[in-house]
Length: 475
Image (tube, rainbow, N blue to C red):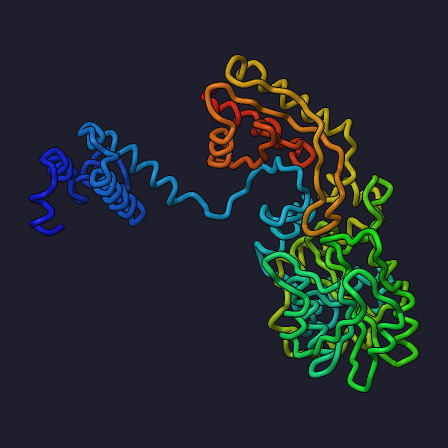
């Protein structure tokens, strides 16, 4: 601050600025109070004092009492708490979106978390063959499970499905042509487009058909000497209805076979179980796709499968071996934690009812409305007394979503606890819950804050009630 600017400054502002204690002075007072003066405390003190200066100059801090030691100590304590709290935190998902990309996608089952802790807390046979005593392959730890559960000849797992598609195209079609229906050139999250992945792999895109209709003759007419493969992209993140059609996979396989070409399908959010019996739209299972004769299929591990983030590649052994031999495979490989979580999840699929009960993604997607309503009533019972007179509470019908780019038009009937605060706005309530020590994320509709109980676990109901009551100052 220049001498000229000081002269122009009102006297009360100068006095407030001069009242701000020096860093060492405030640190000494805090040490007397019993603080362990480490780096985080020093940084917090500097940040608080700098904030005070900015607030005085902006006219936001006008009361000298705000600079009293007790008030400054409270601000340092609050800033210290924010600095030392983890950036990566668990939260309660009341949005009703089961596979919520922004909130971590699939929730892992207890079995997966136990295995991750087991292999992460010590050494493991990640790349050590216990039978031969020699170096082994990390991919073999889950390959047999994937083969048995899907009927594929061989398999490989990389770090996500985009990487799986990139690796397959780089191996099978680099410098050559890949034929794709124009209506399947999808864009997934983060503006990540199939044509971009293909360009990065070195393959050349050949679009066939119209946006809404593609026929077998379109594929056949595009096949030439430079064609490397036919690619089908499952449009799991949008639906085309009305005057639309696409070529069945079995017909593509038959056509490709006549020309000696492989067929690849990017399933996106592949599932191992048929969930249509729970009212969901019929999605092709991985086993059904393999049975159709496709040569290679890719899908995510953290969507409808319900496991950790991974890109799973399955297909004919000859092709999978080529992909394994690609130098890019090492750059895209998964770590021991992903392998541990994925193995635990896959083992649950050997019994369908066990998978539906133990894998949270499947349990939430198959959950009946009666069970959701029972959870809603439990939460309401814990809130009613504490929120009497300050917030109206009701249970309303709502619709959950699958999420993760899967079944975009699928609306799952659900129940939500609806909060209509009295003294504060619904937006302020949303901010308070989002800013709580364990954040609560819901949604606002018609001036109500909704908590869709499909995605709230039984074990979360008691702490959720406490967080809501605290947000209203009721505890």
